[in-house]
Length: 402
Image (cartoon, rainbow, N blue to C red; front, top):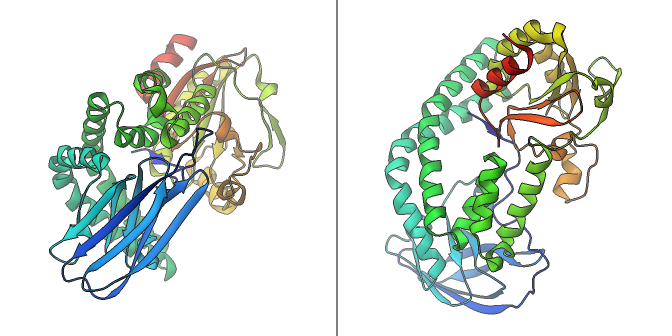
């Protein structure tokens, strides 16, 4: 399983420079059994404007008014504290500039159905297509979430390391069991995008799928979108993702960076010219990354004398101790290690961070490996948005011989 690094909040995406022509919407609710209380609605209103509105529900009835520049996915909830973590009574749906109605016979938002939105009809089709897979995935997902809460509680209680490792092992096992269903879900989503290339639902799907696709596949999907959809909120973000992925894909020159390594020494990628270099993007908390380290050690031992180098680029900027401990435990101090340069404060404020190496290579999931030739040109990408480890092994054999 790959670990996705940047999962932006649903409604935090921004519009591009297209014309921002607003049109009104009305959303009425008829939720039989809903207590008299405030109901909250969160959505992206226009370029750079995220809105959270509220209104009082009386006898299960309420009304929201607003304006939109395009259809957007909104979230409705009763308690923002639980909604932040996807818990409690929460629902989401696609709104558009039209009269819409949300109804439920149980008083629960999760059971509500939206009418009056054509885009939501597309979402309903996708939900129906996903249903058989979701039915099989849900028990495993519920078990994982339950155990993950137990693991977090154990960490807070400072339980022995052996206890924490036991939780990690069980969680990794559940992840492995879920992986085939995630693969099936991906096929369902791609089939939907193929069938409805100009749906806002497809654009949102592609927005969150494209960073883990090979560059050419992502570009092909983007090319099928109409010019208008390419200029939509998600269309512009897809283009940004593709541009980032292009910088870390075969054929592009490798971004040269200079960092202080794990031993306090200066490391510059430019100093490795003339050698084949594997950039290993990983983290101490990434189970698949750690499991892959024995194989990386084998490859390093086999090819290092022939001009092969590895540079570990870790996502542990906020926890240097965990980074150093993992390098020691896994015995991978035989090659150089640096931190990516992640600055969460800048990222949350949408500020540029030229020190973040991962951004230059379009890294959005771990582990991902980038293979660079002696001339500083990328010749392989393995992991997120690239080929698998089998292809990596084949490429190294091709380069160095068996």
